[in-house]
Each structure stands twice: as C-alpha cells, then as structure tokens.
Length: 415
Image 1 (tube, helix red, strand yellow):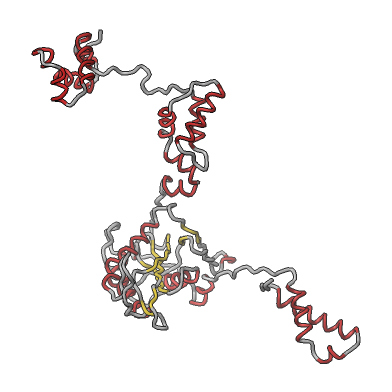
Image 2 (image 1 turned 180 degrees about the horizontal axis):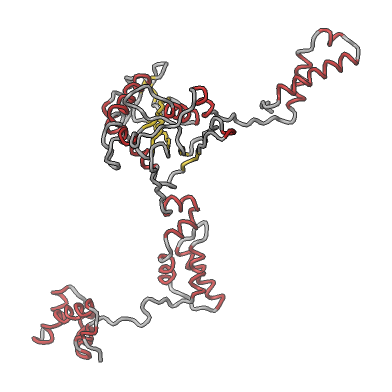
C-alpha cells in the first residue's frame, strides 16, 4: 500500500482538502446532502469520496494518476497521417481532418480515434511549422526567423534609406493640398542623418538617389559634417537603385548596394525610430499636422518652407540630441575616431556614381515594317513619287529602311 508521503505535494494537498470537506460527516455524522449544499458540490461526488476514504483512507482521496499519462493511444504512423492532413494547403478544419483520419483508420484497420485525440495532435504541432505550411516561407520568415542584428563598428560602414509619408499637409505649386514623402539616409553606427529629401511624388529610385547625393557630398554647414561614400548601402524594396562606382574598372572604389526587406533584419527599426522622433518632436508642432485617423488639416506651408524647417530640426535638434540607444549625440558619435570620409573628386563624378539604368524597352516584330509603310506613304519626296524608274524606288526604300531601323531600335512601338 502506498504511503501518503510518496505522493506529490499537489496530490497530498488535494487529499487533505477533500478530507476537510468530509470530516463533519465522518466524525459528527452530518448528512452528505447538507455538505453538498454548503460546499456547492454534487452529492454523487461526495458519496464517491466517502467510499474511497473508507476503502483506502487518505490515499483514496488522492487523485490516481494514469499509467498511460502523456502517451497517445495512436500509432506513430497514424499520428504522422493526422499531422500531414493538418499541414495540407489550403488548410483543413479540425473536423475535416478528423473525418479524413477516420476514413484512413477504417481503411487500414487501425483503431478509430476520438475527435479529442485528433484535436490534441493538431494543437501540439509547432506554430512555426503550421505557418510555414499554410502561409509560405515569407510569412514564416517575418514571424519566426531570428533577426540578425549586425552592428556597424564605425561611421560610414553601413547606411540605410527608407521612405514614409509625413502626417502633414502642404501646398503644392498650384496651391492644392498635398501630403509630402520623406526620404532619409541614416548612418547605422552613429544614427546620424546623412541626407534626406522631401517630395510630393511617390517613392522611387530617383528620390533615393537625390537623398543619397546630399548624404555623400559635403553640406557646407559646420553643424552637419556627415558625408562620404558608405561601404554598404541598404534600402527598402521600393525600386532598386543602380550604383556604378566611379573608376570601378580601375579598382579605385568598392561599394555594395542592396535591398532591405521588411522583417528580415532588426536594423529597420532605426529608420522607423527617426520617423517617430520627427513626428513627435517636429511635425506635431507645425501647421497642417494631421494625426493618424484624423481628417486632413488645412495646409499652410509650402514644400520649400517645410524643407527649411525640417533641415533646421534635423541639424540643430536631432543631430545634437543624446540618442537613447547609443547614449551619445549622433553628430558627436559620427566624428569619433577622426576618420577621413571617402569622397569623389568632383560633384560630376558623384553624379556618375548615382546613374540609373534606363528601363528596358521591347520592339514589336512588325515595328520596322509599319514604320517603313508609314514613311513611304507620307514622307516620300516628289522625285520618288513621280519617278517611274524601279532603281529610283529601290534607292528610296533602302533609305527609308535604314532610317526606320535606327528609329525603332530601343524604342517601343504600340501594337
């Protein structure tokens, strides 16, 4: 016979609590019906407790553990079948998985499980595995991949760029209300703003190039010394910025430009943080500010006026303010070590660094023949129209064909 001391602490406490309920009946003869009303318990429950106490004492009041506790009464093969049904795409409901599993069990002669057994197998599947199976690898990466946080060890080692629409309305060149876009280039090490751009147009590689050009070149402001070519430049996946380092063929400069996808690195939080800082310390005090979810405010400032105020805030407030993560003002941290930033020899060479590749164009197969027919009909000179010589007409068609080819190559002609 087992001893009470051999039970778990929770089982001993439960046995003593049940005996405390039964004690008036055992020692004083109080009716179980009265005890059931006082303790809000079922009479049948108290009768079962009393019978167990008289048979085994306090040991009978302790909850008996099952021998098969923690084990399912299904085979490993059948469990894999249930898991495979639960991970099917498009996903099945729990009831559908149970019906499929029941049919499979009857077909193979296995024991038909209860719905609760199937449900427990489904619930114990790892959430990451379910997300990967049902939603794909991209959603899985956003939710469950470990974020790799590579801290830059010095200034200008890593720059990153991002765009956001400002919570503020301005007047465009025609006096109409418009919401500007804010593009910022941030130094990863110092958190200093290397460059920015305001525009009324949607984010594009052009906006990124304008902000990056300002970031790289000298500002002409003693309070804004951030400049130079970064070792690595990261941007969100808006449009790819093509960077052609000057003198790359001569091995002068090495530069990497990449795309930064949402959810794949914790570095995006730095840019998002400066957006929040700008919104809380600057935009909310400007005319035309509109909080999220509020109707648009009446615009007062023009885009150049906002640009002047924003530059003053970034240079005189943000850059000089102690950063919460680094504990140092961004402007001071960028100058640590007294390094010499890399620069191009001239502004013209910097423009070559930020060249964008033209969009590819497709020439339709019949573009040349159509152009020949059009030019032959409308642009034929008098000597070609009036001449009856076959040689003259052949010379004219040859000239037209040559011009048409030069015109159509690299251009798109609508079908």
